[in-house]
Image 1: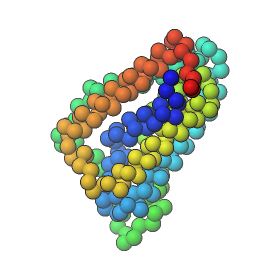
Image 2 (image 1 turned 60 degrees about the vertical axis):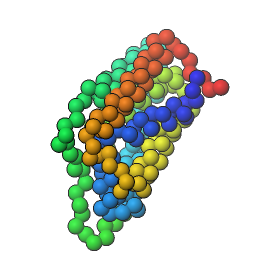
Image 3 (image 1 turned 180 degrees about the vertical axis):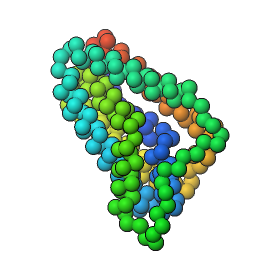
Length: 216
């Protein structure tokens, strides 16, 4: 089987190419206010992700205490992940779709902490994000049978990859033109949808057939 760290990296890459408010915020901030403030925003987003994952993980690890709840929540998590995938696969992108998530601050030299706070609040106030991380925590904890080391490795790979790719986006912000290309956004969302769909299917198969996850 694939090492949990690398499975987490795969999920992190998938999340990183999802075109949502956080990506638009990173690009806008980096272009308007520079790399340092873009990185501060990325760190705020990372901190909010970490906060949510820790809370969801400890909640999930206490819920899944026997084979019955392990299977119930594993199936539930897998179905939701498949649902996320189907949503992205069937979502239509309007040519005029625009998202504005960061308002320009009218100060000469905005402090870095302002952007850190913006990134944190932008991310943590997203109800979809809470649902996604809670579902992921339930599904992954169930898949690894509550093994905290495996779960820690998985989410370390996921969150570390998301942070690294966010910083890369910030550095290359002026060269990224994805957000202005509706056709490319459509195909990227379809790819993301496929990855989430098969990831959810993988979780269902592991839970239903009680396939152990081991590191070799």
